[in-house]
Length: 112
Image 1 (tube, one colour):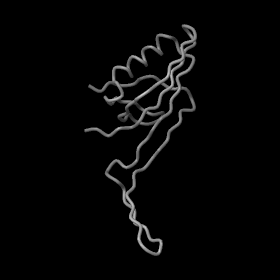
Image 2: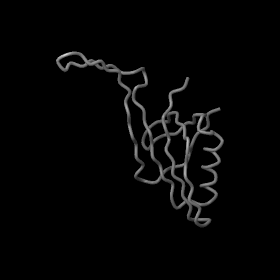
Image 3: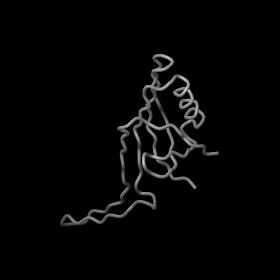
Image 4: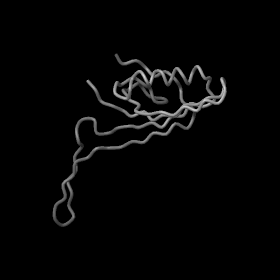
């Protein structure tokens, strides 16, 4: 059971992209490199959801809590198609019923 994270983050979402590369160094400074697997490029998104209602922040938190950091879910980065992600931690700031926020990092996963 996957589910979809449907909330839209604030403008300024940050994407960290990393690659996985195998390398072998030889004499005279030569180096050979190759992708490490078929999914060698991975994304991490740092997201902020500010000025939200308490109900919205609680709904986001409940969704993430249900996944427990282990079960992947669908999420579409801004302007892209949906991919699989996980979230192992998030932070809530509960000010008033109409001024709450949640920040989280979504990490791309590659499951069958």
